[in-house]
Length: 76
Image (cartoon, rainbow, N blue to C red; front, side, top):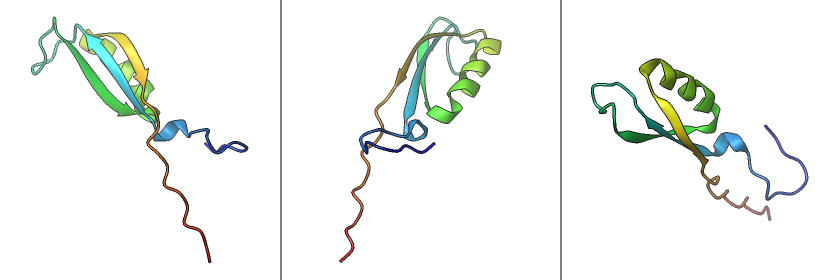
């Protein structure tokens, strides 16, 4: 994805998504506990689709701000 115009717009692909899940039946997570998964924005849909077959339910999704972009070096 590319943006034009204002440089303050961010590329969603560089963002991280935090997905809060409950009710998953896995060996390392109790079925009654909540846990969070951090994934790149581009993998959000795939991750959410994999939660349902494990018996889980997505209870919250948060998109974290993009990391600050490094200023381009000025050419002399």
